[in-house]
Length: 189
Length: 173
Image 1 (cartoon, chains in turn green, brown):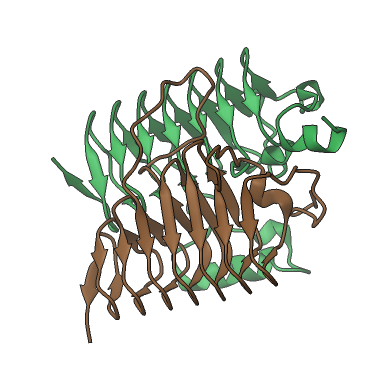
Image 2: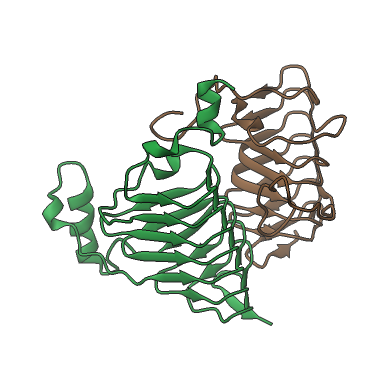
């Protein structure tokens, strides 16, 4: 296998990751680029349990204050983590393609505050004017399936064994074993 | 891989033997075959003058077969299945559409037991499947049908109809 192909197929040197990214035993991280947007200054910032598999579509996009913890034997196919506080995922959970999980809205709802925020983050803006982040941790239990393209928003707790259907938008807590479909997400039995 | 995570044209991913690409068709990047595992006699068949653009990816299991007609455009489409997908001529699909064999598919580990094959997905000719849609097993999308953005399709969309929403609804003219 060429060195270039090894970088695409998980056979690169994991010890070159920043020290605040902790991998359990026998983890598989297909591409190093998953951590390209990890700006977290927390330690640990990312903690993956034993045998966690992270495929190419996953991105850990973390603010300096963000952390992600993933339980053992979970599979992250394409999770876009947008974190500013804490996102916690249990064991044996599957997060499918193009899923977004966010513990923050990142920009204000109020239009005037949002205008100031927009100018502050644009080229030439003053970082001191960026709006304060309002966060609420996301907690996802063991044995959960999160379907293709689903979106999980801040403050949500998803109980163990829940099934989130493809394309569902989860804005409220989901009980253990619950099934959520649609946008906005509806709990169905 | 570039700073933006986009692949270069010349990724060192090998091109599989069991594919048939018709005359004047194009595959933008070898990225498409990073997860290709089909062991069928022909795992991917593409007609003539069709293109697989951008991050289009064939995340195919050993029993998977994908067949794409002539003059089709696939832009950032992820095929993630161990079943059969058939797409007619002149269909446009993209971007960020997933055509999948399960609600939450993931690449299998070597030790995982084989799962039953998903129901086939059949997409007709001259269809237009738009951004962020998810096409699931049992989807049958008729000729000339349109699928709106973010739609999740797991059933019948009649020829000429438009499907939208999640769960999806169908309007016919």
